[in-house]
Image (cartoon, rainbow, N blue to C red; front, side, top):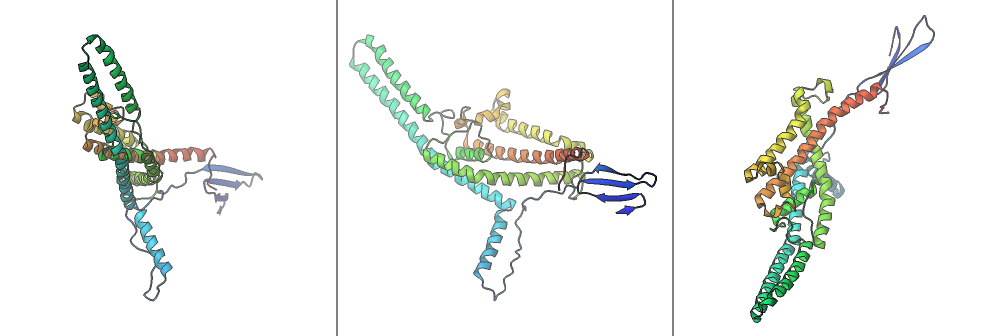
Length: 343
């Protein structure tokens, strides 16, 4: 574009202003960094698309086109946020059942086996003590049986007995908590499958479930972040406003949301269970193998699994909000310094 003072042209991420002065024959150029427009990022549809581009006439009986049309409709339903949520939920329940049938019987069998060993040792010890009248030999006999019991008990503990506080970890509710902790990759203090089949199920479950779960959480986080921003600016525009234009409450929203959500967990899983203030604020430790998760009621384990899922969703929302603001500021600085380009 030309005007009376010189030539102007616009690059993708810079404005190069060039002009020629009649008094000075040389040509000077000025680079001015400008902020490019950021649109709302693409994401999966919330509801599946209901229409299909393949319109088959009654005379068209092509099997290939029909299969292609059905496959497209199926993929639209499956890869929407609602469809993906249903698929991940079903996968989590199926995985929990797989862990339940592979690890649950082993846990029960191990508990019964150790109880039988302890009972048999007690009977043998009582029988030997009754068979001798020399009480001076009793301490040595008792010590012998205690050593035998100790070695058997340590062997059982090494195989997983007593993990989680002495109760049953691999109940179905406990398996739901394990599957959610595996999907969210928040496996801090989680129990470990002991059987080869259970470990194989865990690997397959993680390979399929973790990518699907990440895809779902990232899309939900992006969608929620967009809705929060549109609410903050009272607009449906697709432009992301600059950092300087954001309301103050939006800047503090991530920190406040995290604090409120954590305090909600303190109330739900701490004070409501009659825990003292210190243990109430450290409630996540109660749901670890070393913290006694086996002694927690099944309903509370399921509620904590849902709490973990919502925590990861909140984290995705916070990351999306921070990323939008941070990337905006970084792009502004980078363009002014001439460090960035998109060509």
